[in-house]
Image 1 (cartoon, helix red, strand yellow):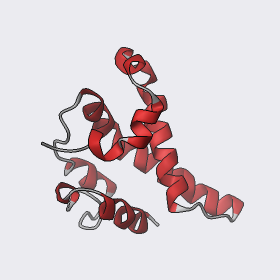
Image 2 (tube, rainbow, N blue to C red):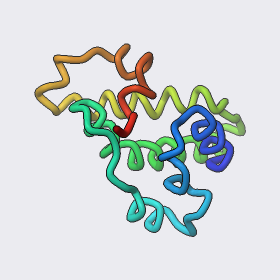
Image 3 (cartoon, one colour):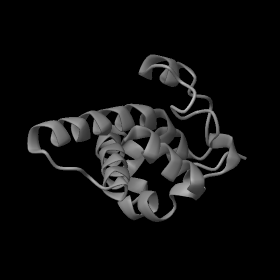
Image 4 (cartoon, rainbow, N blue to C red):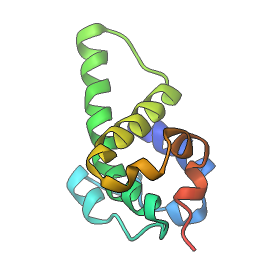
Amino acid sequence: MYKELWRERQSEQEPHFNGVFMEEADSIEEWINAWHVGPTTELGIKIWELLPFATVWILWKCRNYRIFQSKEKMVEAIVAEIKGTIWYWLGIWTRRNHYRFQDLLLNWEMLLKVP
């Protein structure tokens, strides 16, 4: 499931995403340790810091959903849940009130663009 998610997300992203995702990592720990410096926008930096942790959390929840509810979630729903989780976690950041959830949903690629 996670490899399908990565292929889906990578196909939409800039080349700088290559190698970051789990395609080459043997473990979650290795993947997080290999997470490189990302975007330079204020919101993009915060998103980038939370992205691996939100992804692991939501994939774990989806795994449990599949096992205990015998149901699958679509990749698009997983991606939306990851973005929603990041937005929720950003709630403790005092500057979040300068942004809207729509910024995260509609400008994802721009926010995560590396100069």
